[in-house]
Image 1 (tube, helix red, strand yellow):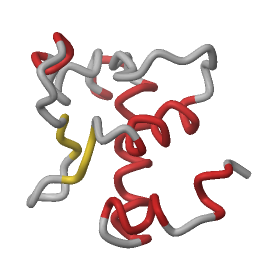
Image 2: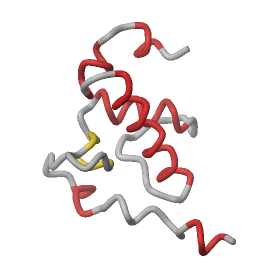
Image 3: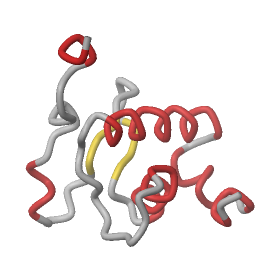
Amino acid sequence: MLEEFKEEEIVNKVGGRFKLSSLIQKRIVALNRGARPLVEMQTKNHMEIVVQEIMTDKIYLDQSGEVAIKDDGSPLDAIEYDDAGPSLEDLV
């Protein structure tokens, strides 16, 4: 189990367990479809990457429940969530 899940900080950061679960699931799908990680890590574990993105305030759920990237002035701001590789229809 990741250490971040043992404390409530990550849950409070995103606004509850349901939102946390939704954010993690949606971001992992994006990473699986080819989106670039927003943090530099030595791991290929998508769960660890997403948790680090949340903990460093890189991503959040917007009002419509979609993953949004926070504007922190880095070059990664231009990357949009929809730039996540081929659609599921393209893979069939």
